Amino acid sequence: MQFALIPFALLPIFYTTFAVNTPVCTNGYTLINNKCLALYTIPASYSAAEESCRSVGATLDNEAITSFVGCTVSLVWIGLYCVDNDPSKCLWDDGTGSAGVYSNFASGFPHINIGKCVYYSAQGTLAGKWVSGDCENDTRAYVCELPYTIADDCTYNYNGFCYSLHSSAPFVQAQETCEQECGNLVSITSEMENRYVSIIGSRGINSVYVLIGGMCPSSNAFAWIDGSVWSYNNIDPAQSLGAGYCMITTNSKTTSLSFGFWGSASCNDAFPFICKRPAGTQCPPNQPVIAVTPVPNQPSYCNSTLLLAPGVITSPNYPQNYDNNLFCSYQLATLGSYKILLKFTGFITEYGRDIVQVYDGDSSDKPLLGTYSGNLNPFNLVSTGNTMYVTFKTDRSAVYQGFTTKVLSYSGPLT
Ligand SMILES: *[C@@H]1O[C@H](CO)[C@@H](O)[C@H](O)[C@H]1NC(C)=O
Ligand SMILES: *[C@@H]1O[C@H](CO)[C@@H](O)[C@H](O)[C@H]1NC(C)=O
Image (cartoon, rainbow, N blue to C red; front, side, top):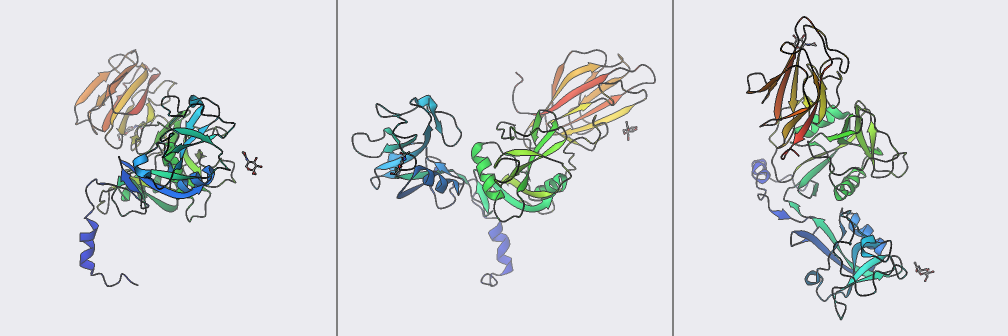
């Protein structure tokens, strides 16, 4: 018990002294030009070099940073792999595309008969130029690159976020646990982050599947529970994701789901899960729990506790007719610094009598954005904050199809 002598009163001081948003590197890497780099001088094959970087979530560095390499080594792998003798057919290791836009090959290269991998010379007449090399038989020094992060004492600190791994729970309870840490079930927004999440998922748990914060609220509509934009998609092409499912990833090569790809699971099934929160923040205890509905149990969302964007709300029975003497309320929210974009894509009610009202906030006490009835063309509304409240009231006669509305997270001008 080597830490038992620390006086208890010192702990809170320790707990609140993170440097404010200072970029730092983990794993002993060096911060250079906002990148975290490590030079490995012992020559290795390209695959061994790549594996070495990958084991901590890093990639082979993309640039010949000669000043960093110095004169300790002369030949250095870069994270580029060519499938043909054309720079546009050479792909960056970190998933950022091809070298067609910018490349610095020596004359006569790339030349895949010599090799599909690429290294650069740090010295001599070819200094800074790129040359083809045999991925297995040539050995070179290499530089691994990690994104910088923010100082925090969490175990998994990567690219400005802290990740934590937890034992099994179904989606809603897992999200509640993450909220206690001021985070959410993990969103994955890049190839690099997906690799890092796979690394965490494979550490010390007995499940091949790990629950992530992805949801499939309706067919071909995907969403992250933390409100992140669905910018990177790694759903296993061999899987079909049904509406109403939550998402898992796998850290095993022996399942029907391919390694690192995402597939669907029932939101009620328990899996180990990963939370994500911004690094460098303190989380006061006893966070309020937001009641989250990962997918609608009542498809219209009439009177549901809360719909977290993105999702769809409709009048009851849509696209069949709604009922007379109806009252529905819809509480909408989006996480983070997003606004809500309501996209009404279908709207027909009894004019002047069966009425939709939209409020800019979390209740009918907040400013009214508009009152709608009749047969309307598609229209959009944007909130000023991250909540909206919608009501639908019908009178005692005449019923129509009603309305259907997409609820989206929104951060910029309408296109
Ligand atoms: C690597 O070297 C081995 C033995 O020297 C040789 O058989 C093999 O063809 C080489 N591989 C490539 C891709 O050149
Ligand atoms: C929704 O809630 C309101 C107020 O609690 C209630 O009057 C109304 O009947 C509910 N609507 C439905 C369709 O259950």
